[in-house]
Image (cartoon, rainbow, N blue to C red):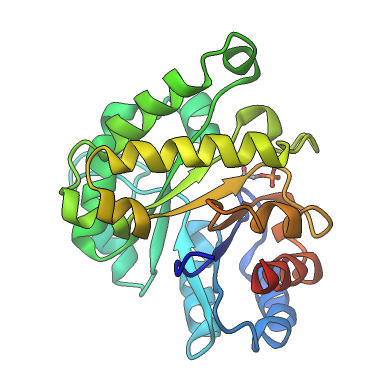
Length: 254
Ligand code: PGA
């Protein structure tokens, strides 16, 4: 067992109005109140962030955003800055989710700026990386991960690398019900940790690396018990308070 605190983060994507988010959180809080030793975060849409920060105050649940812009301000219609998130007491932000990369043209170049901008503002960046099915079949998984990790972390000072969270999410496993095998998840995540060690061995021991992609209550324990897996980024199963709480409980045991 490492002494890294596991993190279970729920990525709600484009789900839940404020009213629905309130219902969820009232059901979740009593279910995770005793989950000491596990960090728990929910990632609602921008419009529900403030309400969720208010409703989780004093609890063990943190509130993270799903994206942010790298600039402090400017002519970037539809975007939000790190300062706009910290003003709401948001604690972190998902960056470079594969849906943002694929559907909204998020680039590694922008991520190289977003990750240090989030850190500078005091937000926990959750940098998402992962290969497509074609890349895995072509034996290109490590090349893709190396590129995404090195680019995304390029402008982060070596001594701050341990403050970043990295989420390894094989794209073929996201929302498909196809979960990586324990061996695939462990190998990829150990590889990502070795990439961080290339910058700083000490920080590589600190950095938390999550697995994401069809994590459910019934497969979480096996994944979370893997030596290099420090938690999970959960999509579909995070929308239901009961299944999300079961995944948090699995992290307690892992
Ligand atoms: P999923 O999504 O758990 O529904 O596969 C994970 C993610 O996209 O972060």
